[in-house]
Amino acid sequence: MHTLALRGTDVVVLAMDVRGAARRSTPNASLVVECDGVLDATRVGAAVTRFLPACPWLAARLWRPFPWGKLHWRIPPVLGSPPIRRDTVAAGDAAALRAHIEAELNTPFAPQREAPVRLRIVDEAKAGAASRSVLILTWFHPLMDPRGAENLLDWLAAIDAGDALPAATGELVAPPNGRPLRERGTLALQCGRHLAALLPAPPASFARGVAAIGRQRVHVASFTDTQPTGLGPRRGEFTGRLAAVGAAIARLAARRGLPDAAFVVPVSVDLRAKGASGPVIGNYLSFHFAHFTTRDATTPAGLAAHLRHQLADAVRTNQIEANAVGMDMLRYRPLRRFFPRVPWADGTDLCSFNCADTGAFTPAARSVFGRAVRNAYHAPGVPPLPGLGVFFNRCGDVQNGVVVWCDGVVTAGEAAGLLDEVAADLAWRPRSAP
Image 1 (spheres, rainbow, N blue to C red):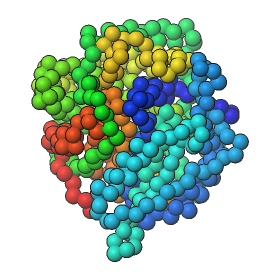
Image 2 (cartoon, rainbow, N blue to C red):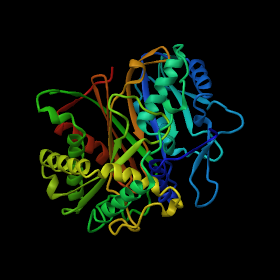
Image 3 (cartoon, one colour):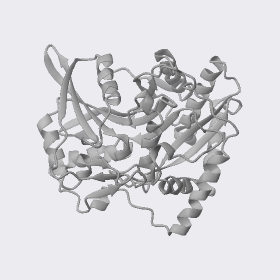
Image 4 (tube, one colour):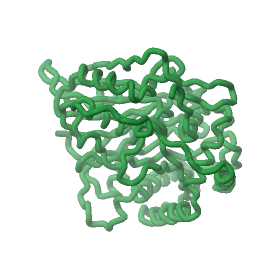
């Protein structure tokens, strides 16, 4: 296998950023792993080099045979490991570390000419000597999803520990949809009808009408759950976290003069079997388009019930599978015409904000390259439209919240305030850095 076609959801990620190409959009994503000691860059590089023959897509180039053809990853004649950049910051200097993460998100890949993966090790120094390292794994987002990045790190850590390479490509690459063409066509039509009827008017967005949308910025905060079992079994569900974000966004919209706003959020749904690690390469996802109004978001609890009802309906009507198939059927379109024409999104924002929860960080039982993992979180890039995203994950008993925004869409104070409000609604207490 010398070429690998992009999945429909891979192309969705790329097409959303192409819409913002005039604003220098960069479809990057980063996984940040804080270790308890100093990483040996030689070990990291050796693991990647050993892994490349089994997973050459890490060194592939993006290629399209015709303007209307399917985008592919093509393996170059010579496989080369991505370089590992090394930097140093003062211990405890969160702003300096954040600047490195932001640099990764804002430095575009040239996927036709370079590998779609980058590695950076940032050492924290005390008294002139490195005391511990932070590994930043950055990738061109159409290559893989956040869970795929964790699976990649899991493979690299296992190879570093002496484990064998994967026996088959099927363990690494997202599988094709096995449904007959007629059935896929029916589902694709269902997807189109659903998108066309989703909203009567464009959704609220803080990016709409902003003339100067700037670089991506990141705000990270870690929390301790003060009542892990005290507020009911559904409190930890993603709909509960999305509701807390949605209520905070609605309050911000009201302060911005949008008291009767309607919102759309593309919620990614992992297609991997529950409990399975699943593939590395490919955004193995579908989308559920959650939507609500300011009136639905009066309280986080009320909004959570509203969102759960929507999600249950989507599962009952097979809408999530229809959305996955619909996106897959559009892969032949030019990127600028990828999205079907829908009345509420024509020529404007496709969504109000991004939100995701990647769950528990799992690579190698939270140990990588001989070092224990203190904390780890994802910082996915956001396109200029909508220019705002709130993301969650858990690492051990640490709850992480990450806000990514584009300068001009919201202020740094508004981004931090969103996360503070969400944490208060979820009964999370700010966690002191060790």
